[in-house]
Structure formats: C-alpha cells, structure tokens
Image: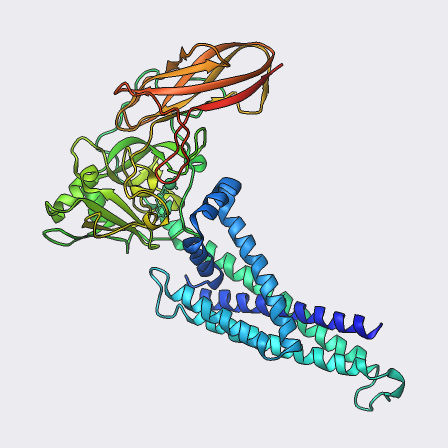
Length: 528
Ligand SMILES: Nc1nc2c(c(=O)[nH]1)N[C@H]1C(S)=C(S)[C@@H](COP(=O)(O)O)O[C@H]1N2
Ligand SMILES: [Mo]
C-alpha cells in the first residue's frame, strides 16, 4: 500500500468510526428515553423541530412528492444528514482532535433544545440526549485512539519491528483487529439496542390497548341514510371513507398517545369562567351522530385529501356555553397536546345551524389514534387546518387580532372556508379503458351549502348533467355518474359542480396556498 492510499484508508475508517459513534449516540438516547423519559427520543424531537421550521414551499413539495410517506422521507433525509455529519466528525476527530467530540457535543445540545421545548416535555426530557452524546463521544474517542495506534504500528517498516514478547504476532494485525473488534461490537449493539428500544416504545403504548377496550355510549340520535345515497359503481369513492383509507395530514412525526383517563379539555381565554372537562364528563353530555366530509387545504384539484365519515360527538357550542364566551371575542384557538393550534371563527362554533363538534367516534369506532384519539374537532365547511384539531386539549376564546394559529405565519390564511369542488374517481387518469358504454363517476362536495348539480364534458363537447346520489345532508359529499359511449382514442374528461346557491365551481386555477385550490379537473383518458 502506498503512503497516500494508507492515509486515505485511515481517514475512511475514521469516518466509519464517526458513523458508529452517531449510532451509539442515538441508541443510547433511545434506550434511556424508553427507561427515563418516554417522549424524548432526540431523533424524533429533531424531526418534529425540522417539520416546524422548514419553509412552506419545501413542506408542500414533500407532501406532493411523497404524499402520506412525507414523514418517512423526512426521517430518511434526516438519517442521511446524520451519516454525513457524523462521518465528518469522525474524520475531524482523527485529523484535528477534539473537533469530532465537539461536534457530538453540539449535536447533543441541539437535541436537548429540541426535546425540552416540545409541548408536554417532562422534566427529564434533556437526559436521553445528554446520555446519548456522552456515550457517542466515549466511543468516538476510543475508536480513534485504536485507529491512531494501528496507524502508528503500520507506519513503522515491518522489517525493523521485532515481535514483542508480550504481544506475539504481527503488531499491525493486532491493532487493526482491536479497532475492528470495538467498531463491530459498538455498531452491532447500537443497532440492536436502538431498534429494539424504539420498537418497544411504540408497541407498549398502552393507549392503543385502552382504545381497543373503550366502549362509547350509543348515539342518542343517528343520521338517516336516504334511499339512493350510495351509487354502485366500480372505482367510485365509497359514500363513507373507511378509517384505514381516510387521508391523514398533520405535523406530528409520531402519533401522540393520549389516555382518555388523563385527558382534559380546558376552555379558557375570554370567558366568564374557565372550564375543565374530563373525557367521561364530555361523553356524558350526550353523543349524537354527524355525517361530515373533511377536506384539507392542501388538496389540489382532483386530489385525495378529502374524506367522508360518520362522526360521533358533542356540539362545540354546548361545551363553549358552559364557559360563557365574551361578546367581543371572535375566534377560538384550539390546541392539541402536541402544541399544534388552529384558529376557528367563534361564530362557526356557536351557530345553531352548524354542526361543529368535538368528535370521539369515527365510522362506528373510537377515533383512531392517528385521527385524534380520544377527542378531535370537526367543523363542516372549514378546511381541516383551521378547524379539525386532533388530540385537542384546549379551546381558548380570543380574537384574530390577538392570537394566531400554527399555519398563519407559515403562508396560510387565518380563516379558510372550503372551496366547493368535484373530482373524477373513475376511469382513473392514465388508465386505458375498453371502448363501449362506461360510467364516468366521482364525488363532489360543498359543505354547509350542498351540491345542486355536477356537469361533465368530453373533449370540446357540451357540458352534460351527471346523475347525483341522494345527499345525506349539505355537509357530506355526493357521488355523481355519467354514462359515456367511449370511442377509441384519447379523450379529455372535465368535471365541474354547481352548489345549492347556484354558484359555479371556480374555473380559474389557484394553488393550495394561501386558502385552497380552485379549477376544474380535466383528465386524459385513453380508450382502445
Ligand atoms: N393536532 C393536529 N391536528 C390537526 C392537524 C395537525 O397537524 N395537528 N392537521 C389538520 C389538518 S391540516 C387537516 S386537513 C386535518 C386532517 O385530519 P385527518 O388526518 O384525520 O384526515 O387535521 C387537522 N388537525
Ligand atoms: Mo389540511
């Protein structure tokens, strides 16, 4: 081996040592988080911090590129950054000690900052990061020490070295072995301990078991599903979106686990008296069924960030009435256990004609953990980000002037009514269909107002009225269908809706920010 090659090899092994130290850092932190401070995993805390600080366009790019996998993409990106930075730390520790150790210290400090500033951080939240940083630094120092010993032995020409009496064999081979033994043991045990700790942490969330055992009282009133409410067409969205298929959008890197036994709802701010409700007290107010279609502001025209569910809940107006909101208030800032906030106009929550609810059930079961267990808000007619706070724990009666919500400084409007829209479900875009009579079908929604008509156009033909399913109410979507004699070739199929006020769906295309997309969906369909 030439001197240059040898130098390069040692620097490479130093990079490996750095990455192994980072693994030890993370594993020690995960393990101590499991034992000492459950929710203080530094990797997840840093990930959540990144979610909160990344610029809006990047967040939109992530959602549009990775969809529901945006969080996995974030974790992979974060992992890559950790590998690069820790490899650099290892090389610097070898070439310019103690810079590598200093870098681990800085990483530890950043993790302490991220874990201790999370909403609901426990007093011991700093500890896993500190333990992790110390463990990582110790391993890095030891590995580099062995690497230096190996390099020193290797740089002495072998013909002048006499095998020492107390160290039989080739000294270079011995020092090399000592380095690889420590690297291998540290790396393997970090991987095993880290992955096990994270898995145990997730699997032993007792809240999942509590949810399974939870029996909600029966609804006092149920929603009548009219005859003809659901069309029987292959490929159309079902009238009610199964929970497993229901879109999920939130800023939570890991799903918050909230025990209903310790859950509290606080109503405070501009009220006559501060109120605190337990889960049992809330449920005892009486549960009723509500069919409401939820829509995300990030839903682009033709997108799937919209779903319909049968909710079980309590009107928010009844809960607010207990506290007595002041007349000069105009907003309710709802807060989640994870610190997320939404700003909802007070009037949307107190209006007798609007079914704004605190939901505890979804499609016949307790709310799924990732849809807000044990309690979330659902408000017909407002995008989710300004109304549908999951894992909700506080309602602060306030004003738009005084307070702002999570998304307001991040490029979204403080108030955001849903823009009514329509979507083609079948035939699927880009799918080739056989010529002949086929249904073009989909859904359309205009929460709080209702859909009057849906119109479909093939290529440059006339707009044709589609058949509608019988609406359940104005807050849920309707299904629509138009039979089409498809002829071979490529065809553009467009759809637009008219609401019960007689307004036409906005034709002009608008992006999702700051307050929701507009435009007519136009799909290219290939017919053979
Ligand atoms: N705690 C919390 N609640 C939240 C959010 C969030 O990020 N955190 N996102 C909101 C947004 S943007 C939408 S569209 C809906 C989505 O609800 P779902 O995930 O049950 O479909 O939840 C809302 N509630
Ligand atoms: Mo959303």
